[in-house]
Image (cartoon, rainbow, N blue to C red):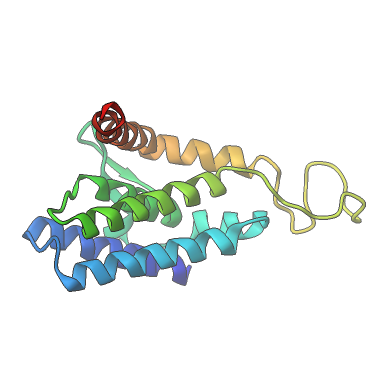
Length: 179
């Protein structure tokens, strides 16, 4: 829960800086790098451990993080990890003028996408001959948690953000490929 709160708090500050026009300052660059490092920590903390993934997604945040305006104008309440990753993915609209901050934003989006993918993938590598059998793991986590996480991200509005990011990346890469 603490990692989710840290990532969410930094993403909120970065969003506030972008709205206030403080885009490419040293503090913003440092915050983006810290956010990248925390997202990498999240990836490493949840890799190969379904119970850690469930804990990340279901962590509790204050209401200011968990209720976010959806694309259609309605408020959607999300669980902690979902809200935090979506707030990181929404940073793609905060275009900066310097190449360094643009590269940092690209790295932040890459790490946020990798964490989302990790949370939506089942990769619990326990020994198949362990004492538990069936679809339930040793900690009682169902193998369908990856599907549940994917559905939560979908319901919370991750798909439009990912499509927007993909369009942006494709439009950025097309002119340089022709030259």
